[in-house]
Image 1 (cartoon, rainbow, N blue to C red):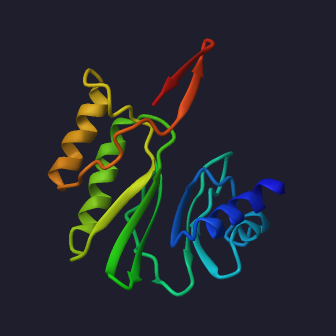
Image 2: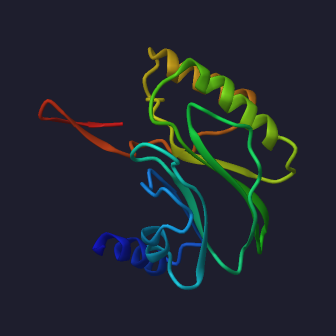
Length: 174
């Protein structure tokens, strides 16, 4: 339970307008843990993991931002939530993805989702946990993802590792 308050404190201490969460481990929208992690002046929209462990995606946002949910095509290879947010500087669409493992169908499903978003005449931010090592030029998945993102004119703004993994006693940034 203490970790729930850490999330809430982080959001408040850093005055975050929005926080996208992946692998929430919640199984229902009324999950008490997700609600306890949400500070009082914030709201949350989510897609719970219906079965199995892990998974689940959510977007926590200040209540003053207007937010709804954009319906997405059905996806079997990843979980996603997409919300348009109305901010003081204009609208923005946020797509939050959790893709737990590699699958050739992932790229077809992601293409279908991105096709839904091209009709929005505002910035689209794509984030989450996609589990593709985009810094490996020899990796087919990395090349395929890079090509797909470039087709939709999506620019990668994160140029540093976002995770540390211990493999056989060695730390690897990914």
